[in-house]
Image 1 (cartoon, rainbow, N blue to C red):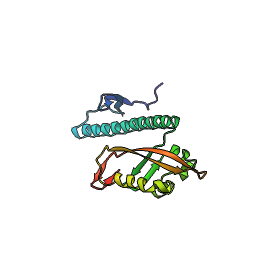
Image 2 (cartoon, one colour; image 1 turned 45 degrees about the vertical axis):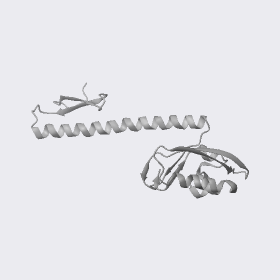
Image 3 (tube, one colour; image 1 turned 30 degrees about the vertical axis):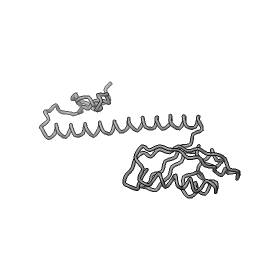
Image 4 (cartoon, one colour; image 1 turned 90 degrees about the vertical axis):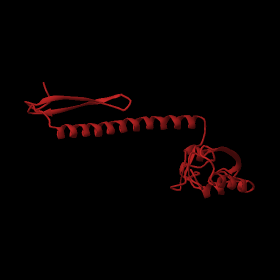
Length: 178
C-alpha cells in the first residue's frame, strides 16, 4: 500500500552528493500531473538541491565534530591533561574541567580568567609567568611553541608544581596572538 495520495507520481530526481562524492540522498519530485519543467523551474530545483546538500553536509560535519570533541575529551581526561584556550579577539578563556580539577577546584571556579589564574601563581613565580603571557601576545609568530613552569596554589592552599605548554595558533595582528 502506497503512502502517497492517489494519482501521485514520483518523478525521479538526481543523487545528492558531497563535494567528495559521498552519497547523501536523492532529490525527487512528487506531482499529481506529469509535466515538463521549464528552465526556471529546473534552476529552482537545482538551487533547492544545493541547499539540501549544504544542510545535509553541515549535519554530517556537526556529527563528526561532536565525535572528535568527545574523543579529545576522553583522551585528555584519561591522561589528566588540562586544556585551555584564550580567544584574545573575544577576550574569552576556555579551560577544560581537568584544568580546574588538577588544582582541586570545581570546573566553574577554574582558570577561565587570566587575573584569577595569575593570582594562583606563587608570588615568586608571578613575574616570570606574567612575562610568558606578555611574550605570547607581543607579536610572536603563529605556531610558536614554548612552555612555562610555575607553582600554583591548590584549593587546599598548598602550592604545587605546574608545567604548561603553550602554542600560539594564529597571530591576527602585530600584537594580537590567540
